[in-house]
Amino acid sequence: MKNTEYNPLADAEHAIREMHDSTYKHLHPVYRKYPLLFLLVLTFSVAATFQGVNGVLEEITYFKEYPLVLMMLGILGLFVTGSLYKRLGGEKQDEG
Image 1 (cartoon, rainbow, N blue to C red):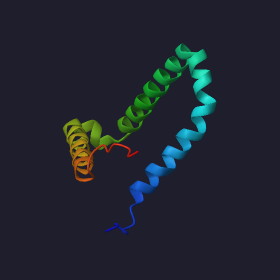
Image 2 (cartoon, one colour):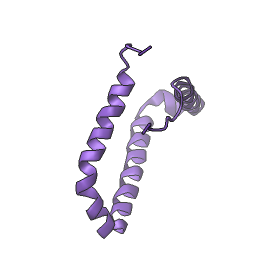
Image 3 (cartoon, helix red, strand yellow):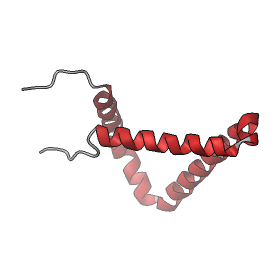
């Protein structure tokens, strides 16, 4: 029996896979030529993202006064995403 329920996560995963496949053929040769450049750009991007989030959170007075609340929200977010991951079946292998 085929499951006919609409699954927005499956649609998002399919769209991301299509985007990855279409960009892979263009980016992979460049990555193979300049792996250090890609590593540096990736490192900068991750650091900039963390710095940006940190800057935004520092502007919120409540979190500045009560950092424990911020930590608990972070732990709650990790717990929720982990539970969703388990509930949705975790990582599935491609068939074929």
